[in-house]
Image (cartoon, rainbow, N blue to C red; front, side, top):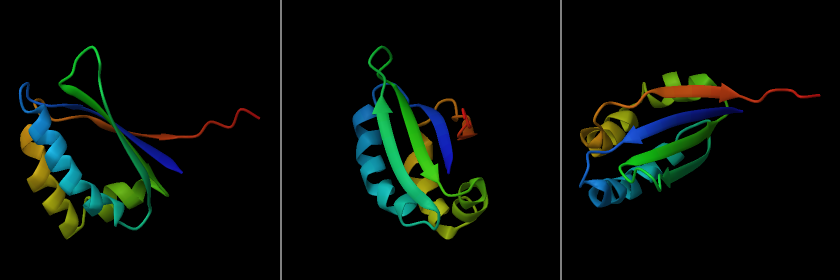
Length: 98
C-alpha cells in the first residue's frame, strides 16, 4: 500500500468553494483502479491549508493510472484553480518495524 500525501494551499477566502468542488471531485478519484481510501483534513492554525491523504495499491496507480487518465482532466478542472502555490505531492510506504 502507498500513501499519497499533499498539503493543499487554497487561496484565502475560497475555502468553502474548494470544499464544494472537492465533494464533486471525490467520486472521480475513488472510481480509479488501485484507489483504496481518501481523507481530507483542514488545518486549525492555518485554515487555508488542507491535508490530502490517499491510499493506493501502488504508486503507479496514482502517477500513471490516475494522472494519465481522462478522469484526471476532470479532477484538474474542478480543483487546480484553488491552489496557490501548486501543492507538492509525495508518496510514502510502510516501514517494517519488525
